[in-house]
Amino acid sequence: MNIENTQSQMRKGILEFCILSIIRRGEAYPSDIVEEMKVANLQILEGTLYPLLTRLKNADMLTYRWVESTSGPPRKYFSLTEKGENFYKELEQTWNELSNGVNTLTNKPNQSSNQ
Image (spheres, rainbow, N blue to C red):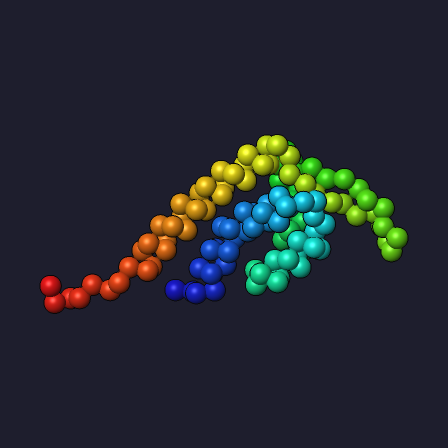
């Protein structure tokens, strides 16, 4: 079995929730999202992030506004819509249930085989 594949699948499963968590705190510029994920030791490439942001925008979870930049082209800042906020709350509930369940299972002491 390939551990890297399993690890990758686990990360992909929580990626959307993590990105929405960042945007939920306030408007976010994609490179800032990449940097914040990096600081949290959750690496993401812009080539992965942009399609995900576009998909979330097309699903009416996100909106964006253009901000002029003094050092280049205008920047697109993303924020949650009301629909996105509701979606985030559902993901948060699911994450808490999964996290609690996994912690319960992984923190359970080993049972003796001499019962």
